[in-house]
Length: 346
Ligand code: NAP
Ligand code: F7E
Image: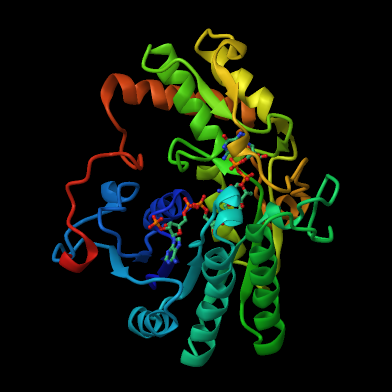
C-alpha cells in the first residue's frame, strides 16, 4: 500500500492538531508548517512528535509563513505532498478589525500564494481551503452551499476572497481544490480568547475560587457550535472524493452565547448572572447575529454527520478545564509545558 504524504499549514492551531492526529492514525506521513516565534508554539502537537532520527517518525515540522510565497513553493517541492490542508490564518474575528491589513495578507492572500505555488510547481496534489461560516455573515439562517455571502468583518471578507480564489484555481487550472465551509467548532484546544474556551476556563476557575468574574461582550449572537475533533474527519473526506466540490460542515442547531454561558456555569453548579460582567471592548463594529449550518450535502455525499452538540460541548470543555486545575494539562492541550526542541533543531 502506498503511504500518502500530507502537508498541513496551521498545524499548531486547534484544527491542525486534530487533523495531524487523524492523518497519523490513518498511516500518513505528515508535514506541518510552523511560523517562527520567540517561544514554543507546538504545545498542541508535542504529544505527536518523535525525533526525526527515529525510523518510526512520521511527523515533520518546517518553518514557514503564509506571507512568504518563495518559502511555501520551496517547501512544496521538498515535501511533494499528495494532499495539502490549508488551515493557517489570522482566525480571530475581533482582532481582524484591529489588524485588517495583516488579516487580508495571511487569511486572504496566503491562500493565493499556496495555490500559485502548487500551480507553478506542477504538483498533482489535492488542496483543502479552510473556509468559514463567517463568509455568510448577515445572510439569514439556515445557510448552505448556495447561500450568498455577506461578510461582516475583515476576516470574513478575506475568507470570501480565499474561497473564490480556490474555486477559480479549480475552474481555471482543473486543480482538485475544495472549500470546507465549516461553522464554529470548539474543543479544549480552542484558543483561549474565543468565547467558548474563555467561558469554559472562567467557569472552572471561578468554581475553584481562582477568579470571581468574567467580562464578555454580546451575549445575543447565535452560533452553530460543533466539536473540532469531529470536523477534521469531514476535511479528510472532502479530499477523498472523485470530484472536487465545496461543503458546509455544521451541526444544524444554534445556541446563543448566553445559553452557552448558562450551560457552562450550570455544569459547575453556579448561576452565571453572579459572575458575568459586560465589557464593550469585546463588541465588534459589525456582528454576525445568527448562524445555523445546513450540512445535508456533507451528510449525503461524504457520509459525515456531527454527533456532539453545544450542551455536550460545554460540559466537555468545562470538564477539561476542571481536569487541568486538578491534574495539569492533557496531551494536546495548547497550554501544556513543552519539552520538545523547536523545528530548526529537529
Ligand atoms: P487557530 O487555532 O487560530 O490556528 C491558526 C493556525 O494558523 C495556527 O497554527 C497559527 O500559527 C497559524 N498561522 C497564523 N498566521 C500564520 C502565518 N502568517 N503563517 C503561518 N501560519 C500562520 O485556528 P483554528 O480554529 O484551528 O482554525 C483553522 C482554520 O479554519 C483557520 O483558517 C480558521 O480561519 C478556519 N476556520 C475555523 C473555524 C473554527 O470554528 N475553529 C471555523 C471555520 C473556519 P500559531 O500557532 O503560530 O499562531
Ligand atoms: O465569538 C461573542 C462574539 O470569537 C463568538 C472563529 O473560529 O468561528 C470563530 O469566529 C461570538 C461572537 O468566534 C465575547 O461577539 C461575546 O458573536 O468565539 P468567537 P467567531 O467570531 O464566531 C468562525 C466560524 C471562524 O471562522 C473564526 O475563525 O461570541 N462574544 N463575548 C465574544 N467573543 C469573544 N471572542 N470574546 C468575548 O468576550
